[in-house]
Length: 247
Image (cartoon, rainbow, N blue to C red):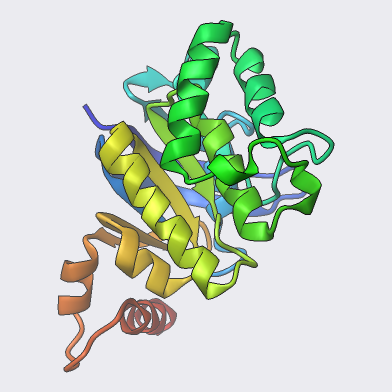
């Protein structure tokens, strides 16, 4: 069973804007799946649909076998989403934010404490537990934001452009943590980005989209081999596909 199976998904807004146009993709359980595309390609519309914030106009979506239209409440219990904008209460400490998040999921105090301790250690946040989050750097805030989403032990974690605005050092630290989420917590990661290097270095599978349609889905290695250059990159793949569809 796939973690996510999307078949001919369409999302048309009330103003007639077609955000997703007959899009299909498959995400395997346990992989890091990256949705790659420029701003306006439909990445946020797709992630908002998959996380039940938006209703699809047409098409079929299955999350770990559950029908998105009929079982949205059940899907929300097994996923977590980190949006582009940090959702941390800056008046609370790191620990207080994580406890609050656990309470929102209806978790008991012991479970919250155990999971919080493990996540703080895994995400190397020990030095920040009692400090007000208002003084944190952007990279630390993002690490806390992801740790908060992991407290419910989701089977699928959605990350919507998590490294936007971060310096290169913070970005690389976050890449390590995303891999750790996959390997240590056995969580499927669905990542959106417009950074080609990020997609290349992190992904088991990449899906390149444009104008709400998938251009191609494959491993980074296979995608790069499809381009006839000595040192191919995902940038070359993206440019080649864009030219091909524009021709």
